[in-house]
Image (cartoon, rainbow, N blue to C red; front, side):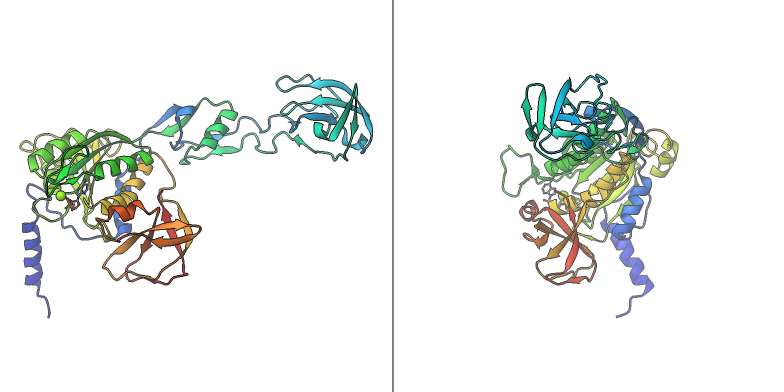
Length: 449
Ligand code: AMP
Ligand code: MG
């Protein structure tokens, strides 16, 4: 059957009638692809200003500038063992050497060694002039002032040469790189006490839903415990964002408006639930009342289609006195740290797996970009698929599974409510629209654990 223009117009009109949107610029929201959603989100996100941090506090921040070596590593030729510093050319198995002095670590006594001589030396101590090898103490027999060598000796043995690990001036940390334990150690090895990093992201969470009860309280028929607040809190902490507030809000427009106002004092606000198309999904309406600009609503991703992204003025005025969102956005652009003095809003579908997947695909990259990271992707790894899989849905499908010993196996029910299955998984496999895979195929999986 053919569809006339009139039918389409009526369908669009009905669609808007069904949506609880009022007092809002009527943006035509088409379902967009994941790639487009990610691009649109990242276009809006700006890195936060850089700051200096003590190295001991810098783990998992991202460097805001390149850092270079001030010193070579090792900084001087030194011994890799407790033993005896010698001239290798004068050492043969069975030979006797005279021990002329001792060189401990920590103070260069500026000793020198000639043929037939040895200096007692300790790990990390500077090599005496003329010595080009160290014999381990286990490979000699001490006899008063002398040693007998029990092994052949080669030049360079057990000597750590100046600069063999790192040259002076070499880049030790690139802008946008994550600071890991070893990075912190490397910075300290150069005498740095501080490192310049992108600032951290302040986030707030609102879980919406009349059915939700806080864990610890008594539950009545028809109610469920709020599991998205801890889920999102943990995911935020995983990205090193600071969780400033966690609130539960009923499906009630005025309460939502007040909660969003409080939450939008931070860089980002994550709202769980209430972004779908039912009468109780009031997040869009509340955001529009506050003059928010909604950039994305609905993405071709499974689970997670109702995903929403927008931005709201941080000091949101009351709905009655507010001009349109677009006007206020222009007024505030250029101030503050993210997008003028605005708060980025991510509306995630309430089903736990949908919230999880959309957080990882859209919120995580935005947070990382704000913190100044270069690599915004989840770590990926090739794995052998253990079962046949086909995506016959209308969207890209993220399959939850277990990656173990290089093999990926889907776990649990692949539905958006199936929290237990999610809890048993450690990786995601993206099945593109219409894609079919066979057991034994090598696939790229995203690791989130
Ligand atoms: P919604 O996106 O609000 O339509 O919610 C979709 C489904 O997710 C419903 O079954 C909700 O009960 C459930 N849900 C919403 N919020 C939460 C939450 N915070 N914790 C657990 N389940 C939730
Ligand atoms: Mg709901």
